[in-house]
Every structure is written in structure tokens, then in C-alpha cells.
Image 1: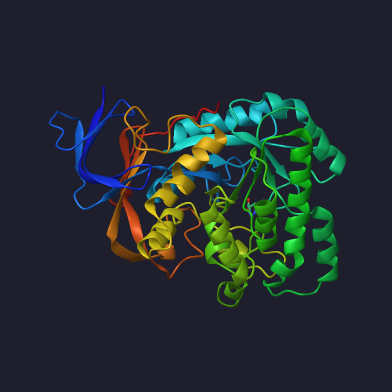
Image 2: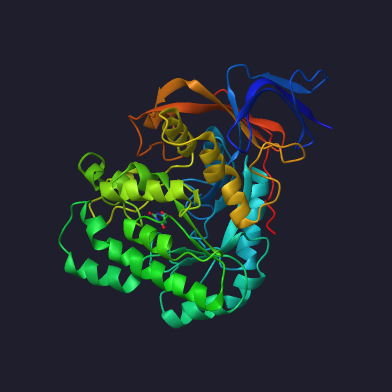
Length: 435
Ligand code: DOR
């Protein structure tokens, strides 16, 4: 039995209050929470002055393996994750090949078992003709539908194909909601414009709203569990504020909270993504929707591309930004400024995604729960720098921002994986279970 003792931490309770004390982890679980635990342990950490949080669950990342390992892989992506306090991730199917068969899913699971230092789960990707697989593939956290084309070849945009998927089966459907027909029409309309900012004009708010409306209508028709990925516009937030069935959830990503079209001038293709960054006003409405519970939780949509690829002229420049290692520091910075609470952060980044995806026993620091934890230093302000990033592409759209609240230790299944700036060798994550 492996025992890890974390001493003298400020421990976050699920309700956002804290207590000063010790946490004993035994064989991957939180065995005891109490002040002054006096026991032998295999390893102990002095956490004085640091805040202990449940490990972050990032429910949307693209780790590019198999197929595009020059950008990222399950090893490098998961190392970036634990650097950012992320102990579990859900990974997207737009790899090469796409994850649209049980064999492709098994392949990812085998690779992750060898390489991932965080716990892992995978989506099964929808095509127009893999309905059987969508309902049988296991273990999968859900079905991913690209309603509009993005990176990779996955696309289901014909209403009859979408309807067939929503009508058959019960498992969670997560949608990339952008209307493909409108994107194509507007690409033609804006052809010739090569400034990166045109990306947000082509894939405008209407593209997102139309697709979200369709997904919502299908979800209501069949009472089908729906999750709206990276909700990006004020119009979609307002739609959900009016009309959000109990079986529908939505997420927002830091890019849509903290970046906007004003950033193209300085960051260019670095901030090009799908769905695109929006107006400043959208930032505020999305933040309010998150605070009000209209939006349920936060993902990052970590989508690394190399700076060399990004430096190509529009529209050759690929869409997507890395983010898995900066989401927690960004949100802790908001907390330090009084704009959200410790309870909010745990709901948005820890237990919220766990509940939505049916991941048992994760996201709260409670006795008997899984010992996925991150110990953060709220006293150090550190500026994000490209060269410090753990992602293989070594850049961040948030470079230059001074953030408060960086992980110093990250613990996965009761073992220290990230330790003061370094990832330890020989510790691996486990496959997530979904109920
Ligand atoms: O900008 C994006 N990049 N949006 C997506 O939906 C996919 C992602 C990627 O995989 O590069």
C-alpha cells in the first residue's frame, strides 16, 4: 500500500470554505482529512501556505495522437496537463486516423496506458454511417459530432444524419456547433481577405447560433443528453438562458472568456480557432452565464498547432490554441481578483465536469474519494512565457499575462506526478470510468 501524506495544507472543501490540516492518501484514495495526522507515510509533502484543490478535469483536449505527434502526443499533452493542475482529461476524436471505430478507441487507450501521466478518457467520433459504433464503443465518455468542419476530417452536417444519431441511443452527444452551410457560403463571400480577423467574420455568431439551435431542437425532440462544447456567443448564452432542458449542459473555454476580436491585431493567427473568438461584449455575457449556471463548466479545447503552421497566411493558418496548462492559473487569477470564488472554481473545473460526464468519485476533496489533487501557490505571480510551456508546441495565447496561482504539486491517484516544475518518471494515469 502506498501512502502519501500532505501536511499543513489549506484544504478546499466543496462548498468553497477551507480548513488547515493534513490529507492522507492511501492506494489512490483520500483516506483521512484531519489536522495533525501522525502516521508513517511513503512520501510526505509540506504544504504550508499552499492551497489544496481537487485535480482539474479538462473535458475537452486535442492531444493529436495518433497521427500528428509532431504537434502533441498523449505523453507531452498529459505532462502539460499536470503542470496546469489537470489530473484527468477527455480527448477528442479528430486525430489521424479519427477515433470512429472500437479499434481506434482501443489503440488510444493502449497508448495512453503507456504514456499518459494523467487519467484519460476518449470520445468516439460520429460519421454519417457509424451509428452502431457510436452506441457500442466502450469505454467512451460520449459521442462527438462536428456539425461544422474544423481540424481533421470529421463532419456530420446533413440534418437527416444528425437526426438519426439523436434518435438512436442514450449516451451523451457533445457537439461542435457551427453551421457548415453558412460557413461555406461566407468563405466564398469573404474570399480574398487574408487578415486573420476575417476568421471571426466568416464563422460569425449566426453560424454558431444556427447549429446550437438545431442541436437543442433535436435534443428536445428525443430527450437526448446533449452537451454543447465551447459555447462562444452571447446569442447562444441567451438562448440557453431562455430554454435549457435539464438534460442539456454547456461549457465555455478560457479563450472565449479572456480573448476577443481585439486580440487579432497583436496575436494574429495565434488566436485563430473554431468557433472563433468573439467581441468583447461576448466575453462579459459568457462570464455572467457561467456565474449564473447557464453554462455548466470550463474546458480548454487545448488544440496545439506549431508556430510555423500558424505563421502561414490566412486561410492556410490552422485553427486552435494550446490551453491545458493555463486554465487553472487563469481562473485562480480571477479568484484572487475577487471575480469568482473557490466554490465556483471547483464546480466549473473539478466536480462539475465529473457529474456531467458521469465520472464517479472525482472532483471533491472528501474521504473515500480519488486522490487527484493539485497544490497551488496563491502567493506567486508568474508571467506566462512561451519558452516555459510544457506543450510540445511551446507557446501560449496568454504569453505575457501575469497569473496568480500556479500548481507546485499535482497528484494523480495518490502519487505525486508534478513536483515543483518537473514531471516525475514512472507514474501513469488510469482510464476513466463513466456511468
Ligand atoms: O480551433 C479548433 N481547433 N477547433 C476545433 O474544433 C478543433 C481544434 C483542433 O483540433 O485543432
